[in-house]
Image (cartoon, rainbow, N blue to C red; front, side, top):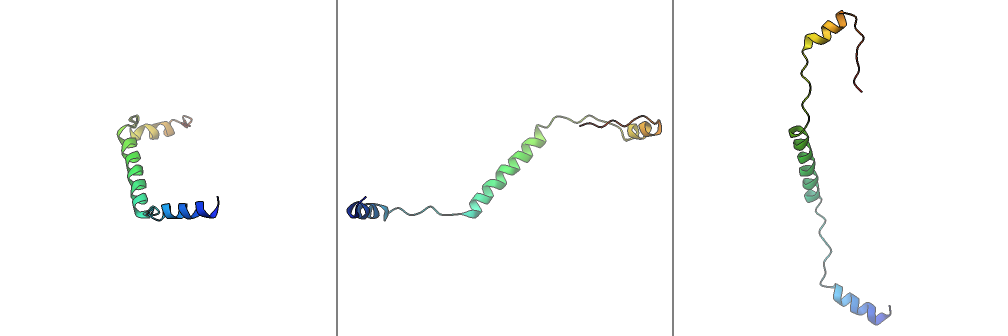
Length: 70
């Protein structure tokens, strides 16, 4: 690229402004995305099995080995 090409390029790029850097707008976008993930996870999560609190106490009192879900 010679000097004339560089001058023409500079002339063309005078009207182009750099994009604004709105950190707040990006932060709001991330917040909306995370909120959507949380709402979707709570709405479409598989139901948890219903267990009564006394079942665990009965299991402990009978000396049954505890089961660990992994």
